[in-house]
Image 1 (cartoon, rainbow, N blue to C red):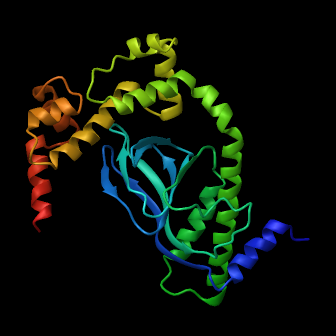
Image 2: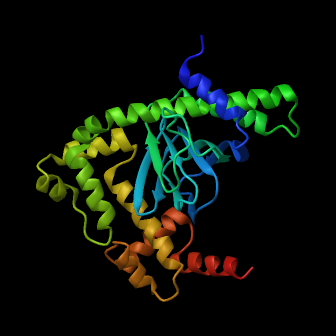
Image 3: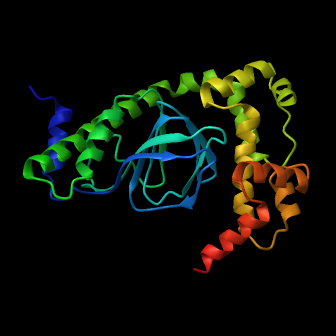
Length: 288
């Protein structure tokens, strides 16, 4: 016998107010230190991290993601994307526009309202559904059977995402206790990139050992604390370099680097171009 939630999902599929359009679906590989600048679109974006790790900048938040985690970004929410400086990253991605009736089943957590995002951990069951959707999306023309299969896969995706989001809500209080002071340190890092960030001092101020903090970064975020900080600083520097009113020295200091010489050395090592060359290439793209 079909349960209430399943019946509600099929009623959604049958509604004249329900419509979907997939813009992008597939597995994408990004090289180390790749960055996609801030943007927004009309579609929901679902990113599942197959391998590697990255950071999504969403509004004023920076969300670290590693293998086995997934993030859902609702329409019109500005976001950017930064890959680990040392390792490449493979992502299964779906961008989909969804129109729904105003009244949705209470248990349906996805689709979300605009302006929201949700990070999910240990959600491997979502991956095969995204992969099957990607296979069908690549077909030029769908038969009636293939279209029906795609419709059912989307309902399955909604149900699985809703279940994972429900678990996240129940787990959230426990997660906050688990991260505790480390979460406060990470928040401080995000808010103070232009300052000197000494992990030993920050750990001491929050009553925990620096060894514990470094282990947390490696195990939970997938990269070392210094690498994480430099990744954020380089991302901020790239944004500032797009503003011609700032000199290279000002960009370096505003991004948290101790000198323009050190900044240029780190920038060139990671980007294979100097800050000045990066600024020039950005200007050139704006005039083509």
